[in-house]
Amino acid sequence: MNRFDFTPYRRSTVGFDRLFELLESSARQNSGDNYPPFNIEKQGEDAYRITLAVAGMQPDDLDITAQQNLLTVTGRKRDDAPKGELLHVGIANRGFERRFELADYVRVADADLANGLLTIDLVREVPEAMKPKTIKLPGQSELKVVENKAGDEGEDTADAA
Image (cartoon, rainbow, N blue to C red; front, side, top):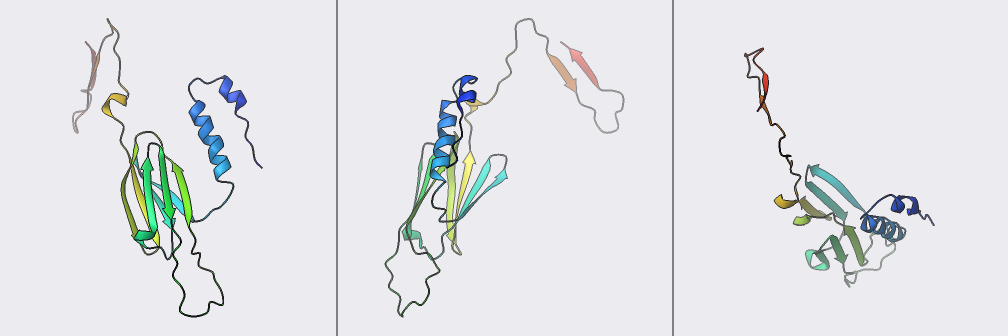
């Protein structure tokens, strides 16, 4: 079993306990079943997509639950009896539960099931109050930058106000 020791890092950081707990729990959870297979892709600065291969599942067989910082996808096994005798069973028809830890301010924007692939679109929306701000100190001068327009060479200035 792979066990990472984060003790040296915990000593030199403040407030990152939750991050280390997520890393440790993720290592414990991912050591088992890998069904269903999935992809995670970044589609833009603040857009992500999770794609799960859920062959044979219908929309009624799937539950998608989004809680704070946790996305859970659950599939229920169907009790469809085959019409004939199965000689080989290669298509998995079993229930599953797959969990994804989400970063702060990530929400589920959309979900779709087509051609045996479940796609879940995620968007990160940071509130305006949480975005970085520049704090000016009293007595600090402001810099004003005038950009060079096409054809106006040599006229760029940076004035201290």
